[in-house]
Length: 206
Image 1 (spheres, one colour):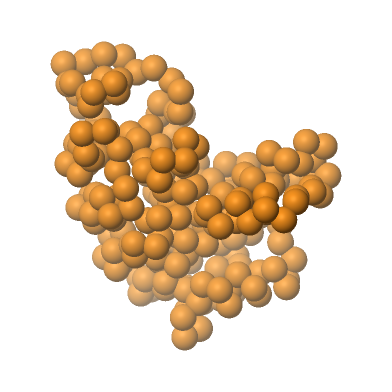
Image 2 (cartoon, rainbow, N blue to C red):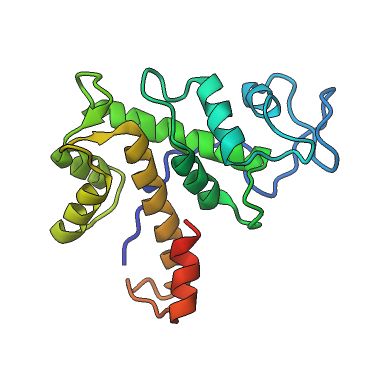
């Protein structure tokens, strides 16, 4: 079974600190118990503007942070539900919140997804047509059959169009569910076994 590589995740910046890496201390103090971050890191200022004393952001804080940062460009700001599923995608410690490393990882993915969206949103309307969504999904490395693609279009389209907010929600779901499936598909055969409760936990958490 060939899974999408980082094409399905958004191309990560190779210089970006990933989960579990230690960052070099600087003059900037972090939150209590948190590592120090580079003084010139623009992500840190966006993050600290809304993060609580625990050094993490919840869905409402993430929505506010992304709006202030302007990553949605001229598009409508992300809905609270989209922010919830973005946090769930990277919430490896199941706190319902996002730390700085997770935020940076999300930002890299969002930037790549936005670039991909703009490739197909040629008129800048903030929406794409169903066949363009199919092309966008294929361009990210996913190989899905026609019924699956049709189901995705029905789930995320409004009046025959897919808007940026829903496009991001779609990308997050695809990435998160693929992650869950891939971790269990040890033989890379494209088949896994789930017990009912386990299946619900995996799908309802996203």
